Length: 114
Length: 114
Image (cartoon, rainbow over all chains, first blue to last red; front, side, top):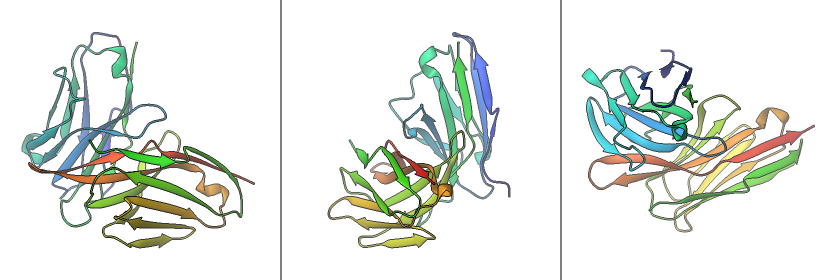
């Protein structure tokens, strides 16, 4: 198992374009989380899934953001009509929900909106 | 709303010295985590603390948790250059409806000088 995988690693887009990121969690992990991290800050929670069900969304997740986890495996995060304020590192994490619930993070997708 | 505060935010120390990073949080929590992040990289799990009085140690790092004071500490013993990184504490707060998510502190950027 190679850990949590995110693609692409970097994405540069123009304002107003749509972008989609993919996250492949550690196999057998039933929970998958998306976070956003800006420079000099800690990650901020966006949303999470248990299997294929999206159980919670942060108020940070505007209606331009949508996330899916079909079949409870990989997940995608789409941002429509990107804005410069969307520029950030988007991190995915997964865990097997139990006692310790340690979340294992991917390397992230760095989004730059020009 | 759960708030997590770390101090100091920036720490420059000499090799061989000891220091402590503090993490305060505002509401009752089930679990507290410490992560390390190197520049341009993702987050690496260091410790998970599950109960009052819990203490975990790995190499030159030791973490402890006081749930009554809502305080966790990360103690660095005889620092070495390889410990230079940003350290985050994160609190897992169960959401009444369905599950949990992590709220992160701002991070402590540690630089160990030879």
